[in-house]
Length: 113
Image (cartoon, rainbow, N blue to C red; front, side, top):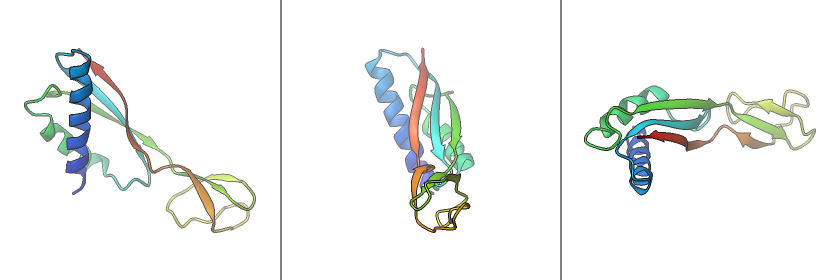
């Protein structure tokens, strides 16, 4: 379950930034998670809650914003939504595309007190 390590990293990053801002606690953390990132949102939420115990994030709300997987065909330049990495271009059936989004895993913002 790599979500535990991800949750620990989110807590560490948020707590470090909150301390730098002189915050008393972190109320909310919003993250972006790409559809093809391999992260299970439910597992991440569960692990995050456990990792927040005895930190500035205790009681913090984790908001997860999904990011759809998008690609651009290298042949016809059509942009399209991916379901998995091996999807071909729906316009020309070319199997080679450039990823535009969908692999993200980043902290977007946090609310502090």
